[in-house]
Image 1 (cartoon, rainbow, N blue to C red):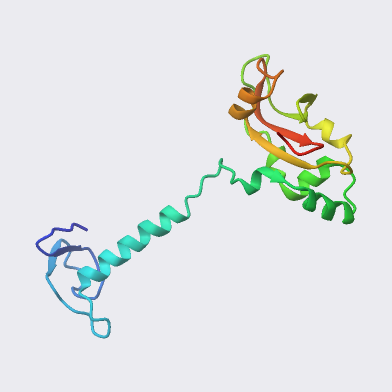
Image 2: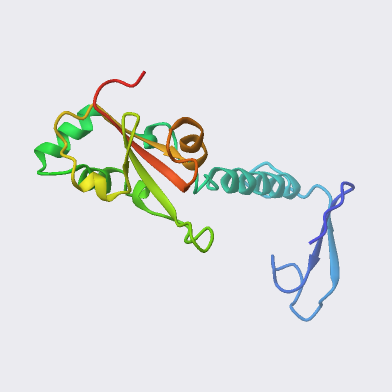
Length: 176
């Protein structure tokens, strides 16, 4: 289809809107201000409205896959209490239930010797990888936060030589 501002030019290659028989390929139909009954809009206005709606829908549905909102970076005390009532025994199970994306390593080896990982911290102390969460109970935990790799590298001590995709930080008291 080609569109010009002097009018709407539709290259018709078939029975698109029933204006020409299928055999007349390449014929140009020029519509300047043809109203469609019942809508009070020209065909040009309807097409521009449909195109704008398509752009809005495409933008709205293209939410970033890799981005997490502020709410999806936190598991608070109330959520942990609910999970405890449901029979969750450790923090790994709690995170697996509420925020399973935190536990997924998306990339493999960074180099021949360094593996991409998700590290676990308790306040400012490095505990290790995700296995540390299986050893930690839900009791006494104030909140759990997820930090992306860049934020974790910049703010947490002891991980500068690792290739970190993210960090799960378990706070036993309110963070400063």
